[in-house]
Image 1 (cartoon, rainbow, N blue to C red):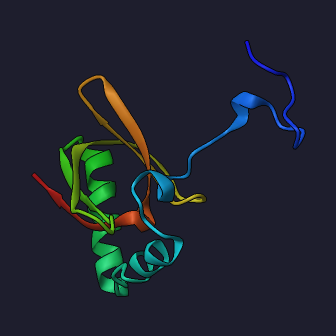
Image 2 (image 1 turned 180 degrees about the vertical axis):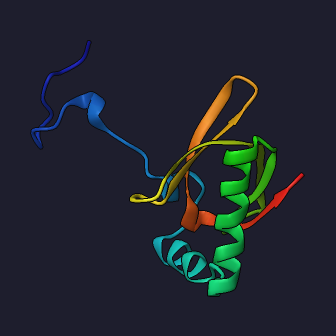
Length: 111
């Protein structure tokens, strides 16, 4: 299955491709996009947290708009768990679920 070690002492299969390389996005461009993330005021953060808690307590569907520098990402589902210490929520839809950082959410509303 190929050579165990290359000249540099790395396995042949240990090559990885960074996201920046795949999409042709430079590191500077990624840093610029990350700096464009909207800063939410306290009132907006409280609204988002209240909506997440309401979804968890009342089992109502919530739609989340997540920060993404390239496109608007929306996920819709039910909050099934909130970890306040790590600021993560578990969003579930159909048979799938995903852990999300609360700090990545820029909008949350009940459907």
